Length: 274
Image 1 (cartoon, rainbow, N blue to C red):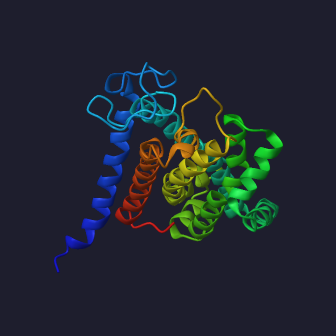
Image 2 (cartoon, rainbow, N blue to C red):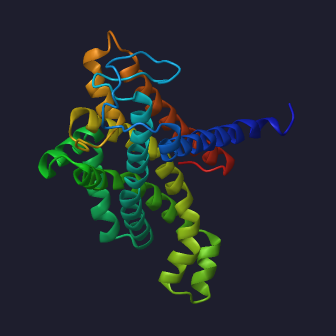
């Protein structure tokens, strides 16, 4: 076996993940050219028409072009998946960094809160927070921030505690560097990579979570176009018009796969354990 073979898998996963995400970005933000039909209007199409040469994904129960709606919905769902990760990533990383380095109360209290949060099912906690705040996009972002910071805090804490005992940090202390300089210039750049890869992997979870909430009517509200709402509206016609649910469902699977492949490829390429 050659030495090049073990690298084939991570490079392949990384390239495939980047390719899938890039293709979806082109489709979503090039939808005005590739699918010029109004995603919210009927466009004078017949209802529940099967895929054809003029309308590749067919039409839904209101005569709307499914291809246009699928591509326009990609804008919202990609933005939700990416943006929903950043608040818990930042908050959890800061908490884990400070707790792992200083210990004491800064470590004990967040870790006990982490234990309590981790003892409940993730999706149930999200639903509980949204039930208090109310449905909508803002409720979704608040809910995932309140619940989702724990994974990043745990990752940053473990990395920081390990790096704090490393030789280069000991040397920095001996040279008289301040704690802030050691944290920001020595520990943070080395501890942030696993949390970053975890954030990329969590984009697939945020995508599925956001689409699920939209399917239940707890996420974005009409007239916004979303894959979850498309599946919810087309479910009643699934027996006679399979394409109304199949294409948005396939879009969810492909994009989630792209995020996972990208995260796995980066993790194996950089030899990082998350």
